Length: 101
Image (cartoon, rainbow, N blue to C red; front, side, top):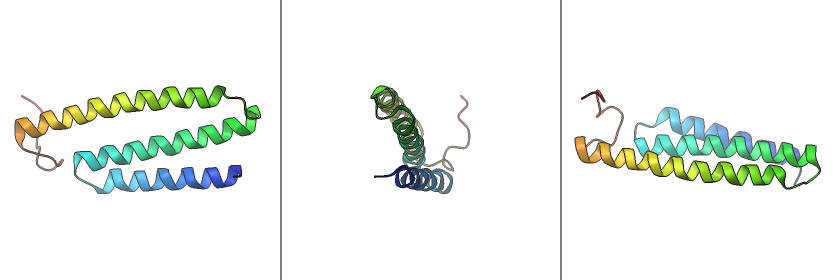
């Protein structure tokens, strides 16, 4: 797999994620869009790192740590969404007019 292929796949992930985050109103779909964007950026980073460092695993370790942080962030985000749903019976951005109270 060449760097060009990796960058094309990364750009596709970022594009799909950006479309998903901007076009959807459901909290879950917005979060999935953000996750795709971050995964695309990390894939581009790994591709660039593999080209620059000659295949040394330091970049891959950094991406694994970033993926761990993303998993924690997703768990916290889904917990917030579940809490909002339980409190207001709302799962879209339009259903929640204000988050104050």
